[in-house]
Image 1 (cartoon, helix red, strand yellow):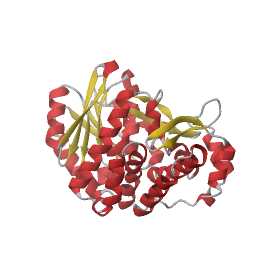
Image 2 (image 1 turned 180 degrees about the vertical axis):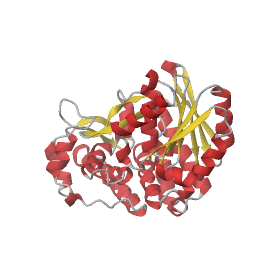
Image 3 (image 1 turned 45 degrees about the vertical axis):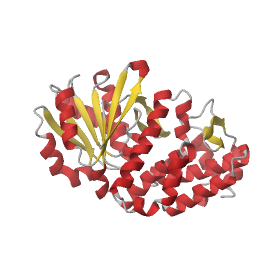
Image 4 (image 1 turned 90 degrees about the horizontal axis):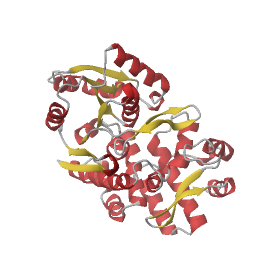
Length: 361
């Protein structure tokens, strides 16, 4: 088992991160010691609940203040005001007070939604992240970004609200569907491209073990990704500047997700977004072409290069980008790379620049 810590100095808080297999004992001990009198509610999705209902009840029912498991439909469409309101109504009907503890047991959708509920219920109640997908374990459960989508765009409603702890139990990854596993690998590749040459080499050399979900290999990679994100968040919790490096691939990627009606999964959209934004980096900032090829090879090797550019007209892409949460004064901004591991943050993107790359992809 590995333990990391995210320290937010301005708030004088430290958030423990646990990574390993079968973390139930550590989780229950943490709850008993840190929240002995808190009413406990679990928020999960229908897929996780169908697979782990008995296990969740077996462990959480040992806690005296366990109340209920609240289940949302699986999928990105649950990151909505409708589901947020439904959860809030259920919690308030159950007399959830300010001493409530919520546990987000699921993938990124569950973590984002449950965290936003926690941030706003009674102006803030405690919550714990218990990510069950690779994407959530390497990215979305770390750093305190919580929120929901709006019809205008992705993640437009939300908050920065830190969990009290993060428990990344890799045992959950054994039952993760193959597409969801690949979905999470896109975020791993992102860290490798923008932050860590060593991780990039791991991905290039260990792809067989990774795709076979070799436990020691996954533990090492998840731990490394969390270390990288923790360092970024500790420097810039609320994304005033440096944390926006983590948005690499997400400007174009979020537009693809939204235009597909969220039928394209986040990781696959981000994979294409990274490729487009790295090609933009080459065209506009003379980023080395060999790194673009390395990214293309990784996306092929991990079966992430699936999206046809022709199915999304550039005018639709551009119109969607105008409402991206990173846009400023009605102009899209994105993270590009000037050189390996040297970002150009908040690059003001012009339609002609994107169109040039899009039409040649």
